[in-house]
Image (cartoon, rainbow, N blue to C red; front, side, top):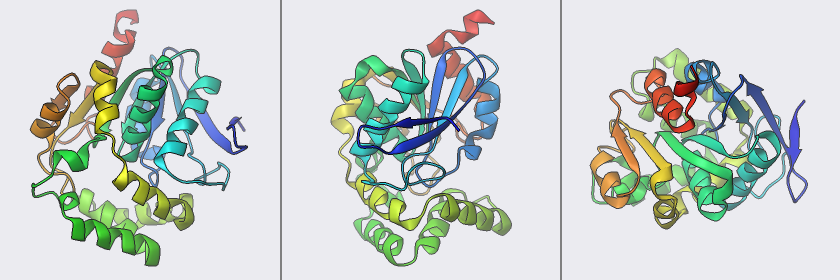
Length: 264
């Protein structure tokens, strides 16, 4: 079982698929890499795709702390040990925050970041807007639920962000998430993600940051324009129905960055 050991002794499990330029998947902390199955399948035709379990999740060590700073450093450890040189990071949700933290602090490890669902400046991008995450009372209620009724919190996040999912699929995702990511690792991560001040680091990453948004997630409604204003050097693109649902579009951007398209 391939693992890497962090400076404080945690073991992080990882897997690889395909050959070519390195791409690391930084998925949402409670989400399974299987959410990226279509993207990974297409990417691995011309890339070496790395997936990994953050600490406390899946097959990695049940060892904290569980916060954005630690997760960013752990992501750097994965790239140093599992990749050949720099990597492109494909990120979702809090994965975007850990990716920009690493890219700002250790730019030699990160060629580019492609955010395929959400962005590291989501709360800044929706201030005064209608997205659920713009409401302090909604966020506090979610944080409380993470502490007291974890499965209900997972159901709320998954069903609200994916209104087209049927009940059976929602239930399956909740079960998978609860089994993969225990509450002890999830609740502090959620608070750290919400409190993370990522705007400065995102700006420092500059044109190495790509954000593919569709603006329809009820948590982060219509953020594309505001994100582009906040991050003038980043590549902010609207992708109808989202880049996870349209993996061929995400792969086209990633292949442009890595040059894999030219090698085909």
